[in-house]
Length: 283
Image (cartoon, rainbow, N blue to C red; front, side, top):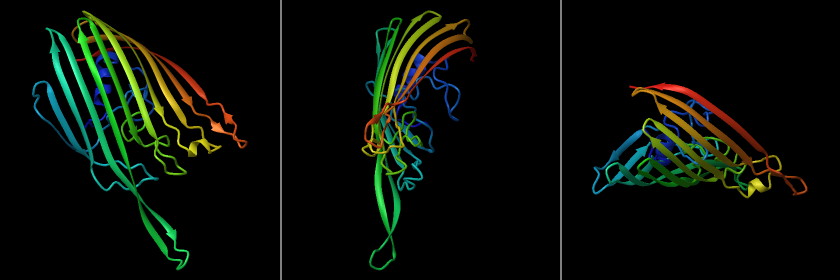
């Protein structure tokens, strides 16, 4: 079942950025086409669960879900409760063909682990329950007026990762201190539709906050930002055949690491350019 957190940002990318394009090629089992996911777009992800949406009343709609919890193992290996997610959207027509849609989303999940230590007096093993939580808040807006399509979105959350909600990676949790990092994403996308032709351009950035322990670890350079800039061109040759051409520039930036003398080693950089072309047949 599709989660609710991140749906607006994913919808904007799907509608205006990469409906028939690749964008950033995915680097895991999710699939070949990520669009702006990982560079400002937070993909909701899939989890077993129950979801319910109310009927639209005056353009407003409430959406709630309870999902199978996800642990951030091995640092936080217990998830005692199901994960609630929700979204509130407002959608209205503007004139004959215009559209305005607004949405806010959120998720929360408690996590835990059991620490074992030795009592200094008795020498007996002592088990202690440790607790923490993962949370996220996101929102966005879509606007369609004539040939113009605009979308903006942003998210902020603890332990949600750069790519999709509750991403299991060394970026989300420190393997040494078990602290959970906080992330921020911002994304903007525009498009122009002229009959059978759609031209689009977008940009986004996902950032990870640096932990205090990261500034002291001489052997670790944590990812700082993943930045994406895209351009796309789609032509509907027939009702079923779409020709696509898109460009994506991916830029990764790291914080760097402190040296033994506490001077800062400059952060690493990596820039990648992708050009994608293809034909989509749909029915």
